[in-house]
Image (cartoon, rainbow over all chains, first blue to last red; front, side):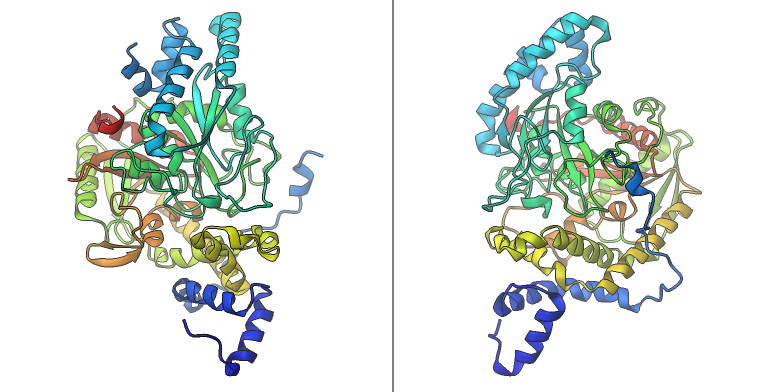
Length: 69
Length: 467
């Protein structure tokens, strides 16, 4: 993988800010490279119109009251 | 019972021998400890052997003498737990050697229940680090030592297959019980999400993690389910559903059972030997009176995307504090990358993954209107050599992670019960697994179908190195 160039600085800073990691820019680049094939797969989700589908994870306000105290 | 019969015996058989006084738990435990001492150097399936295993066995023998016929359900049976289950008497590492990460010495819900059922907790089996992978180094496959056992519950799969213990607990986030079960030639059951408490299991992905047993027989899986299933308020996902006798239908056969086969995703990209074995088993089940129908499910095209988004984001959240502290630098490189990339999954992608999951759950519900179980291969191919990073399935390259969980993760996304049962061997002598999934909380029907496959194939081969 190539090293970050000065021209990449704003983009790298933005990525660090967006992701909230403290990995450092070099490591973040390595992680991005490892993530790339998975992101390609995940990007398929963006082609779907699922506005009418409730996500599978459902908030349940009574859950806290079932736990042992 | 001969020494050989002892370590290959099913839990049911061992219980009958213990009941008849032909065997004590101490004799059985000592025999298995000797097996572990002799064979586990080559296999590396255990990370810890309980110092008090013999003391536990003596206590069990005393209880049995005191209680007689009113014995506990698994009194005197030695079992192992994957190293991500907390245990009071043994350390838990979750497979990591990273400094500054430790886990409490207290029993997980499963350890509590197994102890209460009379089991001897003989040791902890190796897991892929943090259960995030399907290789489980350095564990070897008992059928071919240079092959992987699968993972992440590879230690339990290898130990059960090599006759070191009759049951090992596993956990399954994308296939981690069923993958090693398939590669090692044992039975692995991932029950319905919420059927068994996850309390005290080191989390990987909260909405995908399932505890379950790896055993040598389907009947043994049912025995274990009878003691592990049930409500536990300490696990927010655990459900207060009635607990059936999981062994009640094992002998019923498959006459009239409606089997669904999903042609896309599950049957269209498998090794020819694996596909031939599954097709043959389906023909045999049909000959026994099962009603086999074909279906397709287009949403499965988005399954890998969904599980990547959910699993990466969830494990990233769990490991966030250790990443921030720099401890993830000590993880194995594959696991380090997987947890560190969790923050790269956008919230919108994560939620779309949860929406796809809802669509998939609904599509399976609709399919289960017309079938009782779904049959698939567990794995698209048999175990591969250690160090492999990419495999060819029908000539198409695929990463080992993507290939190994392709056929198992749909049942983590949907939370449906699914079992892997051995159904043959390839030409290299490596086991092939058949997967059966069912409706939520219908483990008895899944076990019934698996028992029929087990009776049909009558596999009595043992790994030659561990005979």
